[in-house]
Length: 168
Image (cartoon, rainbow, N blue to C red; front, side, top):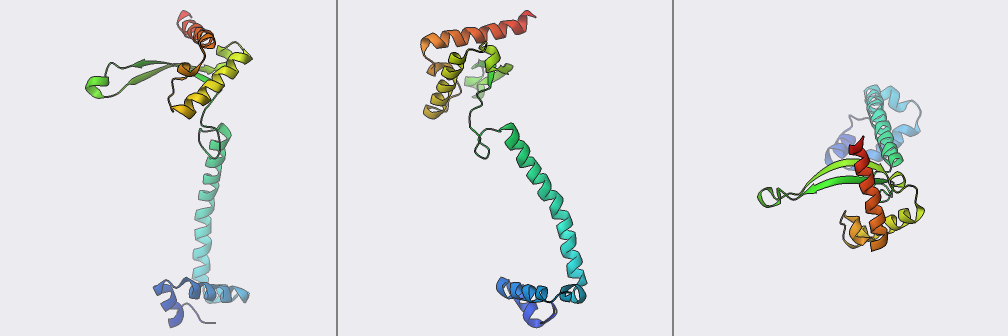
């Protein structure tokens, strides 16, 4: 078993010959205490690297778990559409010609069940229309895809939610 100072091992590391270096590491690990006795600095370096990487790995796992828990759209198999919230907003095309943008101001974000008064039929129609809208046009304006009768009731419920914001 050669040491890290042996020409063959140094050449393998310099040339990037991973197989030769991996073979050396495996040989060194087969004999207990060999690495620790012959290369204490290498062992300390690997331990320090482990100390630095473990908190980073734990933070990354926690971040991914938190994103999955809140259901970030399109993240790790979560749906692309959030059916629980209705967002009421004002859309203005005032700056479309001179600045080239449409401005959006969010007025409220309320649970769809609360806005629709718990009406299961309207919730189902809204969900189906949102899925159809997303599938066909990737357009966020869902009322276009809702049938006329249900559209009236959903928009009326949304209007009531907006008027309750300003009526307080």
